[in-house]
Image (cartoon, rainbow, N blue to C red; front, side):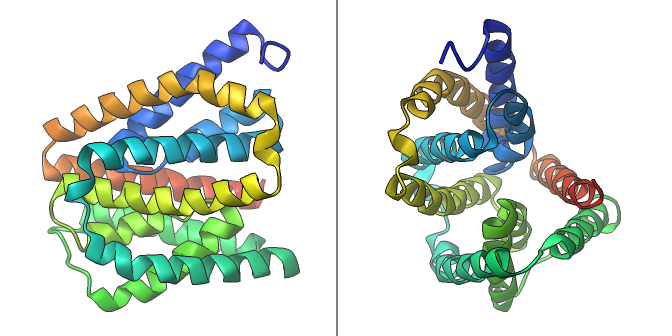
Length: 248
């Protein structure tokens, strides 16, 4: 660990993870969006992705142990097969085509939807359950392609679940499931046999625990309207970064 990061770099990474998991504790997604680009400055990208997957899975387990009974398992039951199918399609697309334009289209959709929800939507909309098919499938595709399908699940669940705590735990559970698949793959190919990744994960866990705890408590004190504004703001940032990634 000492060979990989100086003390200054380690402190920057810990502070970044702390803030990222405040967002995760509040919204149930978004940690990789914030932490990934910063960690990639100081660590090799092939190490950052499995490292964040391991920490995300730990965060999801923490939330599930604490609040798991509040999750809407009916929604999860419908989404999981679609996420698996979409992930397989996304993996195929990634291996056989250049998916850059898909990143741009997804980013534009996220930005326009978030702006609509933040500034023009007058009341909470209730989505038909039939929308589970496009959101589940497309979310799975983009999770495999870019690791950024979480906000699509958030858009769908925000139109299905009224209670903000139930929404947060359900979203966390979905992200945990998606992350578990990646962790199993990384374990299978031997990535987690690298002691550097496991050591860093152990060092980073306290920042994750503290961030998730603060994020959860902030959520409990928020009104539903303010909480949803936080969700849509994260969606807006996610879409903007996808557009930036395309043009850069």
